[in-house]
Image (cartoon, rainbow, N blue to C red; front, side, top):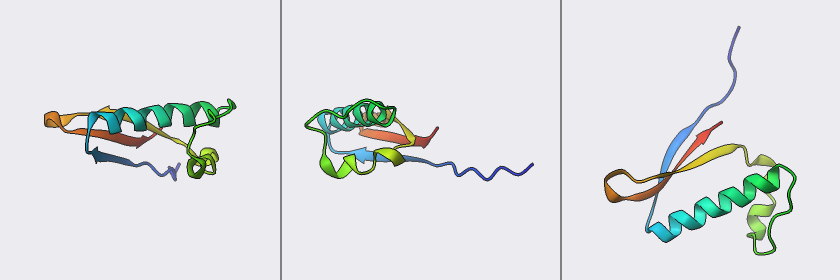
Length: 74
């Protein structure tokens, strides 16, 4: 049987640990909102429009002391 699922994996490099922590926090809030919780009042409005499509995983990625995120399919 054919497997027509699209899978992806990419690493996004970030300038600092603070940027990495912020992105991970936003991702956590978005995942909760996509599962039925209300997003917090300070959640970025441009991302609020994308919550239905928030169907990926995100993990911290720190190779060689660089800060980044590993975004990948579930």
